[in-house]
Length: 314
Image 1 (tube, helix red, strand yellow):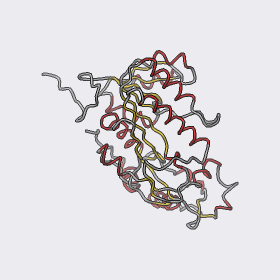
Image 2 (cartoon, rainbow, N blue to C red):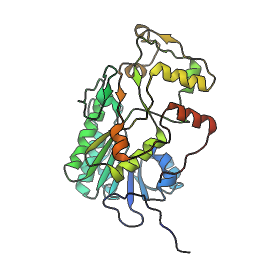
Image 3 (cartoon, rainbow, N blue to C red):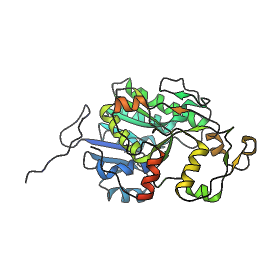
């Protein structure tokens, strides 16, 4: 019987026959959710730093290449591996407002001159606090933390590739959740949330849907475009925690005034509670033409309770 080659419905420029090549930089949770279906569509290589990760990824059909974003010399061996790149690696946790890792990767890719399309997962934190306003991709970036500023620097770095003819797309992702990425331990601890008068708007995207968006961005995104990679949930943060608690029969978290939050919550949590915005996802839907498997928090909670997997993206 003649073997049937499965191709995406819309193949990106640079498609090299039955199976082209994709390099994943930052093969963590989001990328790994895609591997079961991704490896049937393209030859997947991944940058890895430790042997254990290499063992796990090889079992999933991934070619592993030892390299480190903190070591520019090691990137020479990976930069020419594939015409498509997923860059999902986060900036360093500290060190100011620059992302030297992305800068090193971009420099290596520019020297290799092989990459044709690249999708970078950034964060919606680049918008800063928007006082609960609806935010489109054209809004001026106004970071409120060094962490978000490093993401802005990374976006600027990958745009250097766009100026050399690479089709670069940027997904600005909010809080990533999923059936197995819910704040159940926090709810069990009884960590407080802000009272209604002080609460902020929050945004989310399912981890598996984010991987699907990154795949469609390689295929369909217009070069140089940013996309708010968010679902349709419109909730304030405390209401979101209430919804999760109710779904799992847990106590709703106590609500406190903002002035009482320092000392009871971590600096990271406090920083998230200091920014409020509602992401407009219409460009994502219109241009990437993706129907989210989990369009809102209720879909995520239903999936968590049923443990029913979604089909591969077609």
